[in-house]
Amino acid sequence: MKFLRFPFSLAAIALTLLLALLLSVEPALASSDLPRVGSSDHVGLTGAVLFEKNCAGCHIKGGNIVRRGKNLKLKTLQKNGVDSVEAIAQLVTQGKGLMSAYGDRLSAEEIVAVALYVAEQAQQDWQN
Ligand code: HEC
Image (cartoon, rainbow, N blue to C red; front, top):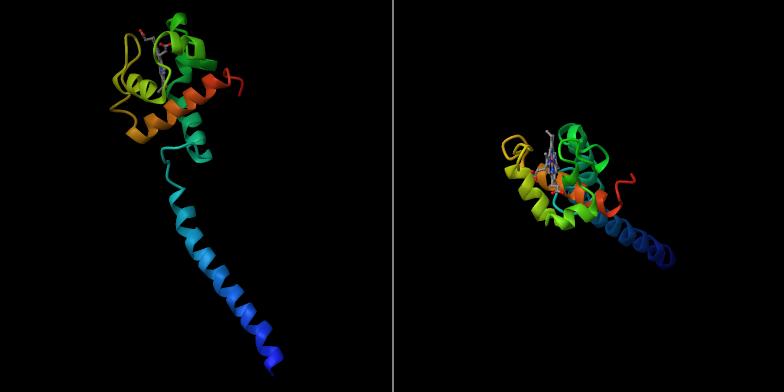
């Protein structure tokens, strides 16, 4: 009987640990459904979709069909001082010159997501 109890209690402990693990992981999974600041895949995907919908018309492949010198390539962004996620998000929110403001069309989270996407693509030279 003593022999039988030992593995049984081990199994019970393992089961408890597994349950605890599942319970602690679940809320994290649920909250990752929301776009959050940070580079999770979900934000990347949202950024890509937002870019496609709102920006690609003028900035296809990181270019600029309206003002070529104001494209989204890393070197250009650096030259124009728009080389941080914050700076990109601010420009998108307020608009500039012939580019309209997106502050009333996109949420703050969406603007950060699209700015992250632009920064990420610029780093990769718009290869993806
Ligand atoms: C109607 C065309 C148009 C659309 C749509 C558009 N832009 Fe622009 N964008 C421009 C123009 C024109 C400029 C140059 C502004 C200036 O400096 O005069 C610009 C500049 C920028 C810059 C700065 C580039 C640099 O090198 O200085 C960033 C970053 C940018 N846009 C991101 C975006 C994002 C992100 C979106 C989508 C949310 C977007 N743009 C949508 C036309 C557009």
